[in-house]
Image (tube, rainbow, N blue to C red; front, side, top):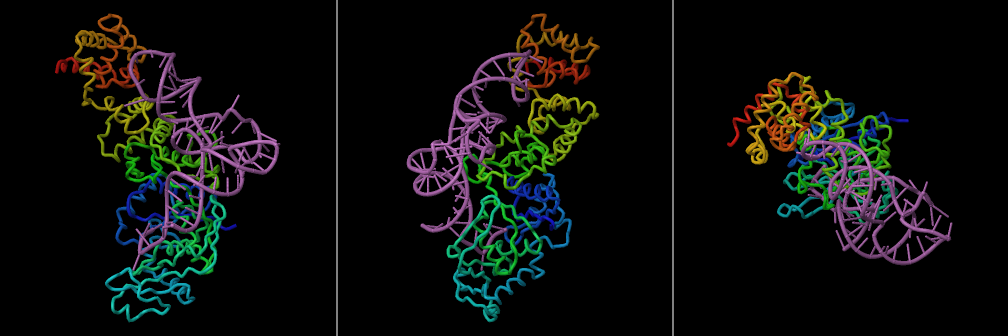
Length: 467
RNA sequence: GCCCCCAUCGUCUAGCGGCCUAGGACACUGGCCUUUCAAGCCAGAAGCAGGGGUUCGAAUCCCCUUGGGGGCGCCA
């Protein structure tokens, strides 16, 4: 039984889209499950739109997703080069084009000089004279008569009347191959056994099958997976908001959260929805992928992410947090890890993303937090505020037991003085030491902050009253 | 226009002829907990697109309609 080989072949014309990430994921999943190889190929035959920066960004995003490849432009391999532009230079596509022309299964087309869309000559002979005079010349595949069939892992038996398919360009006038041609040459030469790709390629597949047949090559196993849609059921695009992997990384979605959600989108792994992908590798069945377009739901993504944040090891979360802060360029907390882990531990209970975690934990790490407007108007500037805060400073200064129980006793003692309702007292204290009205539990918060910070902050609150 | 794919709660899904008065999850609503809350727990509302068949029996099989999506580029 020969080795299974799958690939992901993005064109470097932008960021990695979540749809692309999902396609890559399914290919990767199967390659890994089967103990085969996963290959990254860059399809940069569109000179106008392809950029090196995009290639870098895509590779970076893929890596962040935890998807690794055995062969690719950056790691090499026995079937390279792995950039189509470099394969053009080696004459790979021309070589097979010539073979097809010789067999009269492809032909040259010369175009009018003024109207570059208008063909003026089709020929099996290389139009040398026109070439010298600078005419545009392409090579097209000649669609034979008959019926083209193939089997799709998801769609089943597919059948196309060749009469509904027109001849298509294989080699553009700039000498570069078109997608439908290059993909066949490369997949064959790279010994790809399974091609999992978006459903938007389904109608192109018969063209590719014809090229395989013309060259006498066996076809790989195809599977066309449904597209990811936006809320209005049109394909997910910028119109629906940001869709790049980089964006979700930026707002604090964990790699494992994104991958879990993307896998969930079309693949049900039993009842459980939250899982570690690597542990579920063995459960992956390509044929089990949902067969209809799926709507991308950012809210569920966040929920999945929050679940992961709450169930992962706390120091692992801290590491992710630090990495994310570096990635975003935000101000980095400076404190010992023991303190940080305590903070993260209580804050993660209420948030779903690293970004939310950053905001919620901010007052634990930094002194320059600002008071929320609502806190100032409804609590800090309330008539009872001064008296409560003075008592609080007095009590907390004397407090030696800073455990959660210890801080709770003091808080309740202050509330029992009936200067204001318990709720108002607690909110006043909460806001004074964090600037926020929504925080982890008040007693935990005070306990973690500790005497120095708490007293200093209470004093500062009094000082800023009436401002 | 031609060709192709698809169709279970708003969304993601379970279901592959009887276990379905259709199960789970997100979101939503209500309640609990409670010092706040975006966390947690409990409960509720919400669906087989429509019409024909096949069958003792259809969400499940077939046909039509409708709806959605894709392709038909010297884009990939």
